Image 1 (cartoon, one colour):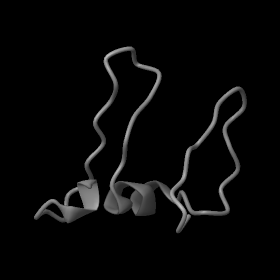
Image 2: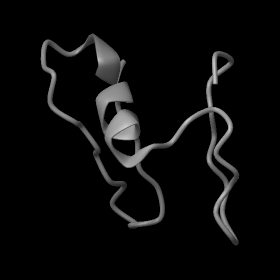
Image 3: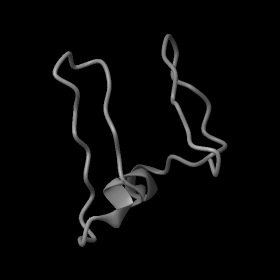
Length: 51
């Protein structure tokens, strides 16, 4: 959904509890997160079927 927005800006909304966030592909590219990036210690990176 976030990748469909008409912007090239990184978009990272953070959940109200501060424990989750969504990121568009631009944001993931900037920080170097890929389908091969392991989950963080004590956390889980939920990825779509395409990685």
